[in-house]
Amino acid sequence: MHSNYIVFGRRWTAQWTFLLGMSLIIVFSLIPAVGIVVISFTDIRSLPFLPTHWVGLENYRTFFSSAQLAYNTTALENTFIFAISVTLFQNVIALFIAVLLNQNLKGRTFARAMVFLPTILGVTVIGLIFSLVFNPSGGPAERLWNMLGASSAFFGDPGLAMTLVIAVQVWAGIGVTVVIYLAGLQAIPQELYEVAALDGASKWQQLRHVTIPLLAPSVTANTLLSVIGSLQSYQLIYVLTGPNNPATQVLSLAIFTAAFGGGAGGSVASQGYAAAISMVQFVIVLVVSLVTLFYLRRRETSL
Amino acid sequence: MSTLSVPPIGPTISGPMISGPLVDAPRRGGRLTAMRVLSYVLMVLVVLIYLYPIAYLVNTALKSNNEFVTNPNGLVHHPLLSNFVEAWRRGGFATSVLNSVLYTAVAAGLGTITSLLVAFPVARGYLKHSRLWGMLFAAMMFLPNTLVTVFQLALHLHLYDTRLGYMLILASGVGVGPLLIVGYLSSIPREIDEAAAIDGAGYLRYVLTFLPSLLRPVLSTTFILQAIGVWNDIILATILFTDSSKFPVSLGLFTFKGAYVSQWSLLSAATLIVAAPLLVVYVFLQRYLVASVVGGAVKG
Image 1 (cartoon, chains in turn blue, purple):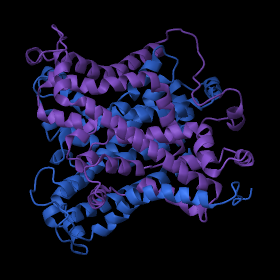
Image 2 (cartoon, chains in turn purple, red):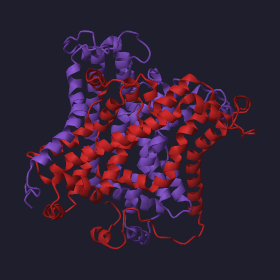
Image 3 (spheres, chains in turn purple, cyan):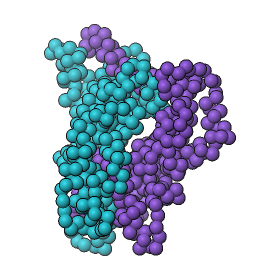
């Protein structure tokens, strides 16, 4: 096929409408993205009338300086703990739910709808629901804890907050993962299971040797989506524990806090420094996604 | 492929078995084996994990503050609707829900049209360096966090604290949209373009009126993926808006929570007011939404 064969006579209509569309993307997405690199070398502030200077690598030096190191190490650690846990739990649990709801059970349509429901509820509704359930002065979670002879401040407990945030994120995000696994499962021909059963494979062996290998493309898609999403996620953490809680501080929230205050400090926020954190996060997301993609693609072929 | 011998899947897949992506496993009789009982138990457990928090929310919203304090976990004894009246009166949720509907419709709608306008010429080779543009579309999924520059841009373009600025910024976040549409267009034969051109349709008329019906699945995927993102935004709204009458419902509800800390009955009623229209929409659109999300994610 001739790749440059033009159907509609003049190219220029195609070109100006393309430019029209691209200009929206360029002005409000690409320029800000490139701008992050540029202003990470400046001391630009949130107030427009203050002068801006070039500061070279100062912001990056600040990020790794001893004064900030403890805080930023915590944010980095939290980001990785959050991303790895969410990716892992979300995918493993979603796979089991998908296998479960792919069976011929009465009420499974309702069950699928329930699992997908949080996707449309939105972060604030989800945040309020779980603030209520984990309300430390008399909620159902507190009663459960009391029955076990314990008590906790839940989201206010530095030792537990991260675990709870991860759990709520998995609860809220698993619907999409389940639905993608379900689509993958339904593309697997039923005959394969019949052959496997004739060969004497147990249910577990069928899952291990038929379902999982043939589901590899869905696993890749889901893992990548979870990794990219959870490394950059902050909306739900913000709603559940606020912007400046050390126990759940992740890089995205560190960017928000550095640029727009939102708590401690009090000085006029340095947005150059926040941009430098954005760049650190960007490199991490890029490297981790590419490594994950490379690893999963190789696994797909070897399974 | 390790221990089990698996027959080649090519011919099986093209067979009549798979008539669509959402075919369910054939019925295997209704005998209640131990496996099936276990499956039912697990399914009920999954449903409860999702239903319980929402049921608890409804139960709390129907209680008076006194009843909640004295008996937070029991079933409501004296159900009342006054919390809803109170939350509606004080929260201004009519405004913020409408704002969110407006932002979501405009931003995701504009984003989808933009995706179509940039994807079609790239897919059909109307431009020089089409491949390069395609690579740019892929790179757009990996942009850094642009909160800071977007804020500065809004300040300098006088779009700070305006609905227009907020919607334009969200609309520009097209994500996988253009990539999905380019991919889908490869399955639409060029002969259709030709037939329309011969019938005298111009480029714009073809792209904006004929194509959308051919591309309906991928356009709805693009729209819904972006709409979910817009609907869930709270951070961008926090940094761009100061005027609370422009808040989307995510931020409106969050602000309400800040103002009525620990008044759980009132907060629950407010949450339900926001969630109720979504639940109604969801009942009708559930299948559609689910299919769209799958389409977007798998092809992306």
